[in-house]
Amino acid sequence: VRATEQKVREIECTFPPEVLRQRPVHDEIDLTKLSEFESFYVEFCIQNDLFMNFHIHHKANEWAADDDIFISVIESLKERGTGLSPFEYGQTRAHLLAKHINQIKEEYATARLLLVQSQHRTSEFDNISRRTLLANCHDYSRFDIYSGLLKSAFQLSYNILDKIASFVNTYLDIGFPEKAVQFKKEEFWVEQGEFRTRMLETENLSLYALFDIYKDFGSNAYSRIVSIRNALTHRKLTPYTIVLQSDMNKLGEEEIEMDEMMNKTIEMVKLSKFAVIYLVNFVNTEERKRIPDGKITLPMQINTDQYF
Image 1 (cartoon, helix red, strand yellow):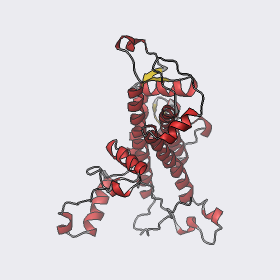
Image 2 (tube, rainbow, N blue to C red; image 1 turned 180 degrees about the horizontal axis):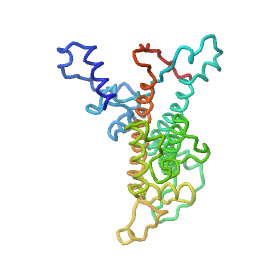
Image 3 (tube, helix red, strand yellow; image 1 turned 60 degrees about the vertical axis):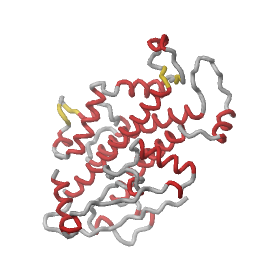
């Protein structure tokens, strides 16, 4: 709440009242300028609210079709260093934290892409799928490249939660064994039956929100998601395009209707999206605490070019 109030004051100091009274208008995104697949991708993501930003009121515009959230890191000039080699420069605190966030956001973007590809039929993907010998069991079970893409999207987005826990462990210097960090592990969040003291003392609502997600898993709110993940990771999961009404009750934990698999994957991708947003807000709130009272901070932009 304090961070929001501070941001509102900054905005009020930046713009005159007559500007603030105007309702912002964004142009609709022009999908005709995109390739056929990119247009499908952007439209699918907008419809399912899969882009990672704070444009919550008007989704179908260019500004809402990006993942533009990121952490802001407070560094002293001494911490930043001068005369460093490129490798040494990349090992400063800001860049080390950025690499961790990069990994998380990269995996989210990849999971989302796999999800969209699973819904985009092309002759090329059809032919690629046919290059792999698969048995047709004639019971409407579905095994092909599209089913594989959907399952992979689910698994990759689920794994993001563990990386978020790993980041929190490192950032707060909790000292939990790195290889044992798991988002759903009680010992990571709780000590002596209570919310871990190091986390509680931050008074950070975004970190508390991540804890709430953990508690939702503990209360079995995501029991079906967990069973899907366990089947995919440790055994097998058989999706069916059609299930007769008389057979509905015969489906086990390792079997699922294709429509449910699609819906649960979207749910899992969106859950990981919200978790990443909470993580970014958590970091930004903690970083503002590093500013000494009365000190002035200067903005320093980080390079965001991608080299292919």
